Amino acid sequence: MGAGKRRCKLPTCPDSRCSTSQWPSSMQSGRWSLGLKRCPTHGKSRSCCVRSLASGECNAATALAPSVLHRFSPEAGDPLSRTIDDPQHVVCPVGANQVLVQVALIDAPHIAPRELLVECQPCEAGQGRVEVPGTRGALDTWTCVTCDADSYVLNPNDGRMCMACPRGLRCFGNEHVESRVAGANWTVQDGTMRLHSCPAGYRVQPPPSGRASSSFDTALQECVACGLGEECTAPPCVTCSLCAPGAYKDSSEQRPCTACPANTFLASPGAQSLSSCTLCPTRSSTRGLSGQSSDTACACDPGLYLAVHRDGLRSCERCPRGAVCDGSSLSTRGGLDETGQVVWERDEDGLFHLKQCPRGYRLDTAAQECQRCGPGEYILASDDPSLECRPCITGMWCVGGGPPSSQPPLEGQLRLSGLGPAQLASPVALTAMIEAVLSEVLGGGDAVVSVTLPNAAIDSDIIVDLDGTRRADADSDEGLLVDFQAVSDGQGSEALQSLAQAAPFSDTLASALADRGLDVVVAVPTVAVAENVGPVGGFEIRGGAAVLVSCPKGHLLVNSSLDAQHCKRCEGLTYSVDPLDACGQRAAKRSAATASARPAQQALAASEGALLSR
Image 1: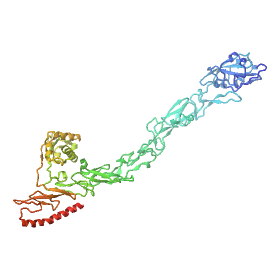
Image 2 (image 1 turned 180 degrees about the horizontal axis):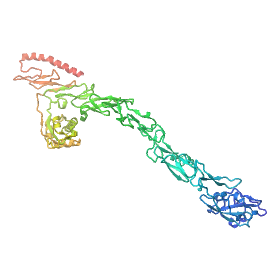
Image 3 (image 1 turned 120 degrees about the horizontal axis):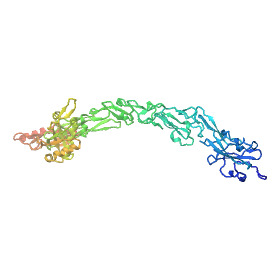
Image 4 (image 1 turned 90 degrees about the horizontal axis):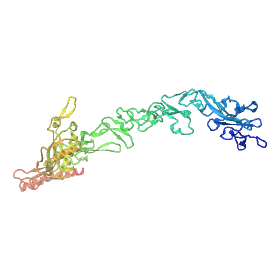
């Protein structure tokens, strides 16, 4: 610098405190290295600066180190004419092999700046670049160092240091790495090894959700076996999922979850031990199946049914006498459920109780069964266990075991053609279906219908093949003859007869049966109103039974026993005006006969009172 000027000891080059006019014209523009802490001084007056021409921009990575400039001095001649032969002190740009720099001496305008080509010394395989902080204002520099055996470097000259070996790899201090878990998917990303997925039974650690964080440490990457109660069975695996219900896993291994053994179940996911599998109730099993996820898989043994108690406990209970239990369901014995009239109810402890039987059956709650009334018997209701089956009153009709009726029923036959083995194999279900359809067609569902299937006809229409297969006889065009009786409170029997004899009746029946899944051809060979079989009297319902209380003139009332009630016709030329009177006796004897009949009538009244009190 000239006299009166402050000597230039600048924190950066150039600086506003120094006049750039002192610099050679080639040094008065452009961008200067920002990496110099201060301009090193040579002697008392000389300082220097460096500008890189490698990329058009000057930065710490492209600046010539002060330690190199210290080697040049005016006393040694023109330092800028020398070739720099110590490139390890030059910080090269990443990926560059050569650096073109411009060097000039401040306060020495007579020495023109020089452009020097600096050769960058590359790192060898297995080496990485390590930055060396500058001291006393010198630039930071880098040097090549050999990587440790537990590290790796993929490209020694891409500016990367030796990278810590991830937990999931084996490293050898160079670009060679090996996965510790076969099947793991590793790729190179920004010069580092990145784990993307793992094989079955493993998960990626750290989880992918944390990789966007600036604190993500690539050295922690590895495939970790799924933990307790976890698995991954569909690679590529990134995360593990909980064991499904019905399975558990009691160790942190690659293996999948283990199915709960037979005769156990497990409803919740993520189970970690065999003890989580719950045993089926006593006298039940899963029928050899493992991995069950619900207690409904535990079927009781044959002859039992499952009951769920109010406290949630489950037990297998003995099947009621009137039912059939296969371990998972309960059905009424004899196929009576097909009638749609049987009702079973469960109490708070899940136990079944029979509440209603089909028409014509007595409800026996003690035995828990439906008992069919005998031929010629009736029962007033099938949901009251106090009622008994009684003989039908002579001269009246008890269709299908229902209450007595003085109205003669409609009687007839149906011929059904085209029945298959499935329908013929269940006569009770077939009977119930035909009765329901006839009741609907004849009386809008109010008609009482009784159907009788001839077993001989069923057997004759079935052919058993050599392999045991049962099928309908395709050559038989006679069909199945079905006897029926029908009575309706809303319509007289003559009206029912008119309906049955109408042309559309057969087609209407066939259509209604088809709607229920029974595709047959229906014919009505005969239909007629039944004839009275005796004198018809009047009856009342007393104490759960029909009691004959009146007879037509010329008949005597016989009702001393509910099992033998009838109206007795007076014989010959005798007569009777009072049903309690004798037939054709003289007046004097009639009074005695009447008196003798009174005790019987009183006994009947006592019997009725007993019935009413039940």
